[in-house]
Every structure is written in structure tokens, then in C-alpha cells.
Length: 448
Image 1 (cartoon, rainbow, N blue to C red):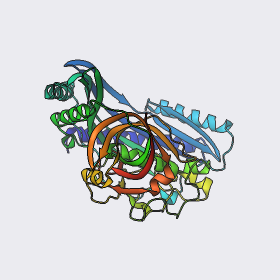
Image 2: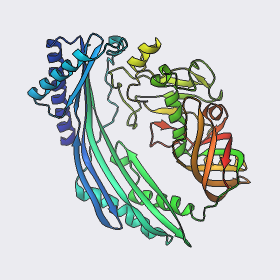
Image 3: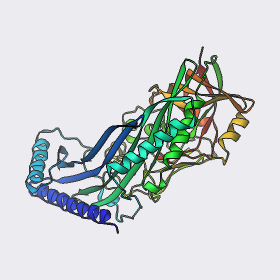
């Protein structure tokens, strides 16, 4: 074990003791139930532009959050000071607040039986050099290489490097107390290209738990250059109804809307287009989406959720049929269901695919739109109506012909999900939803 890991483990152990003290004191004050959580991280963010250092930020943050229940009355407070006196003061504040809140019959801890009984090592923490010298070297090398690759790259929006390590600790009055270490490193570069009087901007980035799994600065630079110059000489296109392929790096947003539609908060508020769809066909019968929360080293892996509920492998969609809603303990009680370990979000979704490359999908599509950028927030989860600004490439005869911009694509998510023709094997691993490019049978395209 490296000295950095030893130090982190000791820090986490000390915080676990602080959480235990807070839980014990809350019990002394007469709290019927209590939970405490803290996520702490420290690291560096640097930014460069045109060979000059723009920002160097060292940060360390994380507050202990305390929620105390007096029956169905709930009070919350937090403190960044983990001295015994500060913790006791925060617990007292939460207790005082609980005395004056209105009872909520659905408030409380997740069931004791749902707590994680084992905390597997998911290989989530790999500390790395967090010196300003190393961070700046990475960002400067990336931007410098990008600016040398193509004369059409005339300016830069900058490059950035970040490296953070930390831990999450959660405990409650069921006797659950556990934590895990985590890290995240990233490198990005944003460029501006020019052709005639027209200019375009695009970027690339890489992110991973382990620094050695990041793309090299040169690879990020090449990817950013290719993406940026490919957008030059973009055209507007006529309004039409055409097939649409969402490239993998934007396709994850489609399934992000699915996450929202099957999340308990939207369901008990009756604000989801997938209300009462459990056990129904919502995707094509060939498509399965599985959740794998214990996938080693994945960016969204976690041994337990923000309520201590065990995370488990499960099919969210099996052969197109919706198998699970995503429940916190609160939403589960509202809906008469069981919590599913999704307090705080999802844990590494694996979206099935047809083993086709993006190039093969374009060839099979023939004529249509390849979307590489989405803009705006025109998504209504109540109705499923979908309308967003987009940019990308026009495909004809199975080949990319030219870049397009200033268009709007529209449809309804329910229809879009049901009419997925294929999903590519170009899976993007930089997100909690791991998916390839997604081909939708038909969408409305508003152009000139």
C-alpha cells in the first residue's frame, strides 16, 4: 500500500469514528433514528490557454451531514469542523430543528434489512501526483500538441487537468457504518477552428479512476482537433422527418431521460411518462439494460447507496421490458415498494448493443442525421415530449457528406425508445451509462 493510500485510510478511519460519535450523541438526545454522511475530497484543478497558466486551484472540501428523526419529524444540519464540540453542536441543531418540523409519515431511514452487509473492494481509488508541476505539464502538453496539428486550428479555449482523491463514509442508527475510498482524474482540451470567416468550436476529454487509464495528452489533442475541424463549413438543412443516430458520447443523455422517468421522485409525483409501466415493453425486445454497481474501477460503481442500501446487479430492462423502478427509501414508502439502492443515482448501466460499428450503422441507415452535439433542455418527462437543438453530420448513401448546424430534432421519448433500430459497439466508458451510438427510426428535424 502506498503512503498516500495509508494516509487516506487513516483519515477515513478517523472520520468513521467522528460519525460514530455523532450517532451516539444523537441517541443520547433522544433521537428515534439518525444518519450521518460525509464525502471528502482533495485535489488540484489547473487550466491553461495558449501556453499560459490561467488557473491553479488546490481544493479540499466535504461536510458532515446529520439527519435526526424524532418519530416522523426530521431535522438536518451539517458541519465542516469535525472536532467533538462542533459535531455535538451540529447534532443538537438537527435535534432542535426536528422538534419544530411537521411530521412526515414517509420519512425515516431505509429498512435495516436493506443495509449492505459486505463492502467489497471495487478498485475505485488510485492516488496520483497532485503537484502543480505535473498537472500543468499535462495540460500544456495537450494544448501545445493540439495547436501544432492543423493550421485550421487558430485559437484555443484552453486545456484542463484535474486529480482528486477522497472517501465517502455513511452511518446510521441501524448499526451500519462503512466507507470507501475513491479517486477521479481527467484531462480536457477545447479548440477553435476557422475556415474563411466561419469558426467552429469543439473539444475532447478523458476521465478515469486510475491516472494510467487516461488517454495521453497527444491522444486528447488529436481527438479534439479532429472533432473541431470536422465541423468547419457546416450547413443548414431543410425541415424533414428522417432517421437519426445519436453518437455514443451524446447517446447516454437519452438513457439519462429514462433514468429520470423511472425514478421514484417523479413517479410518486405522477410526473413521468412511464408511470405504471413496470412489467411493460418500453424498449425493443432485443434490448437489455443491466446495472452492474460492483464493476471494478468504473466511474459509477459503489458498494452501497447514499442510505447504506446494498447495491446489487440487476436488469433494469430485460428484453425490452421494464423490470425495476429506481427507489430511495422515501419514494419506496410513498409507492408501497422496496428501496433499490438508488439514493444518489444509478451505478454503471450497461446498455446492450448489436455489435455494429458506427460506420456500419450509418451505412445501413442510408440517409439521415448523425447527432454529435445537443443543446437546450427541451425535454418534458411528464409527456415524454423531446425537442432539442442539435449539430452533427448529414449522411447520404451510407456515408457522412457534410457537417450541419442550427437544427432542432423533435419526437416523443416513448416512441423514440420503442423505435430504436440498433445500438453500436462504440461504447463510451466515460459515463455512468455505458452505451454505444443509438439509431432512432425516425424523428422530426426542423431546419431552414
